[in-house]
Length: 232
Image 1 (cartoon, rainbow, N blue to C red):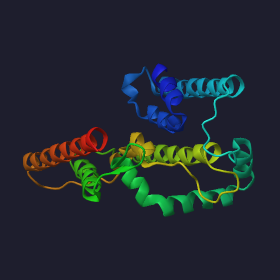
Image 2 (image 1 turned 120 degrees about the vertical axis):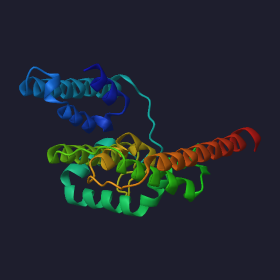
Image 3 (image 1 turned 30 degrees about the vertical axis):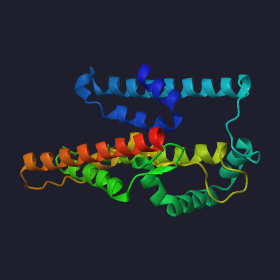
Image 4 (image 1 turned 120 degrees about the horizontal axis):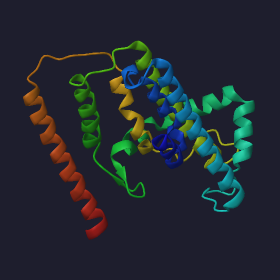
């Protein structure tokens, strides 16, 4: 319960990840009913804690982090509720227009978005994630695969929606403020929920190449960061 509350208080957009509690094996509880009571109780507790914090922040705190005076959270939420189809189109268009930036900023855009690593580094890290999924036991049960995909999709919707409500000026047809790094905690859900693909290769050689690449990419990144913020 403490972990569930901590997750939503740190970033409420990760609330859907609590659905993964339903994946805990039944053997960890007296019976399946106990597991479901535990998972539902943890989710309800987290929602209540997050709701209480939001009410307190709105009523007691006067700090505003919105970058533009035209931002109005209430009007944005009202518009999204009354125009669900149009809002879904805004999310779709924003995702399509900025997909490459989301991929880059997930791995290789740092600082005040003014330091970008070469795209080869970014692409390499993505390839590493995909390759490692071939040597990791994926989730076999279909309902758990669906649960992981739902967790990622709902989390993505919350990320877009939170920035639409609190960061985007009223009436704008794109969503401002979304960065790829916001998706990192949920990213590994996708390869784990993917199909069970196995490649017959010598895993020792694969690990040797992967570790060599990761070491090189990490050292390159550290050098770039040092030169950007301590030399130039």
